[in-house]
Image (cartoon, rainbow, N blue to C red; front, side, top):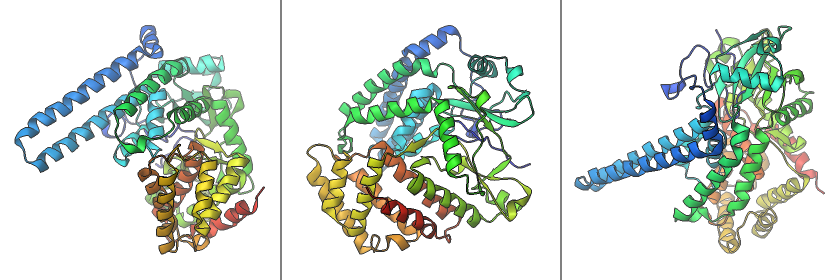
Length: 487
């Protein structure tokens, strides 16, 4: 039987668990977390429980390094270094596990940090990315109460069928299969009931913890506007907690892509959608990275990839509103009889979406022109306009940008941008990532970072599914329209 993922998965997650399993992948988390008493809820929403657990995790981390250091006294230098690496890996996993168990703002903070290559080393970012789908779900009784409180009706009245075991669980919500009273199959995304009440305390704790880490760190990459980035994180979190806003984004993206019959966006069930509950139609489907499943269905990966690239090129370069999480867990191929001849791609999980302002789009056009012309002055000018350069850092940023453009020029990257293959576009992405990681005082607005990362994810997906597909050839008409739409 083919897998049938949810059409609206938890934020940053897609089908991490199946109803036939009793644990998360690798057995790290139990499928159903223990219920919460009123006292436990108060401890969580007041911030007391998170603080106590953070203190304990910090103490155990110090102990791990102390033991590793003591044992390494009698070892060779190489053995000591290896022991320190193992201690660091173990510590990072403990912290990631804690963030996942705390859910909400803590798990989101981990995800936010993982998306910032200008701030976080890749080793830590890789561990933090597991927070997209490794969170322990709530027990059925708590989910029932949350749904009934939001919909203001008994669960049996709202749904003809409701699977108590979740399809997936992530930082702020989990998803269940269900059927409406008329039999329509749906997926129901349910927000953890204490998340809203805990946000204020969680943000205060996170702000204090982040500031402490900044003071302890000697890494030059941490030269950035902390208040600005924390504000971006807090605003983004508030947006993702509003499922009605997610529903509106999904509906608008569906309307924007309606002319392309090869794309399917789930329909929002307005009668069963509220701020903390989102219900959307459910479709049998296969993950686009499931090469065996696609082969059995007679679907060519190249056709699927063309559909995905066309959809993202239109969203990013034309519509200005885009689904910002194009990993395989959010993209599926519909399992239907005509799939071998006319495959259709299903987009799910619109919790992470972005609308780019006309002002930001215009600055981005100028930046692309500067890249194509290898114009350092114009490129740095656009960076300043976007407040990407911290005070006093412009000289170092200008030098780093000049070196980057020289490397791109030596590879012919900017001269042939419009005709560059996917691998060459990915090399430009690597250059940009290197610039962010190695240049003190360079800070990227979160909207612009999501824009760039979405493009990079799409091209990386192309390399994974079918490197022979010319992604730039598909994207160029939309890119040219974007460059021509100048104020």
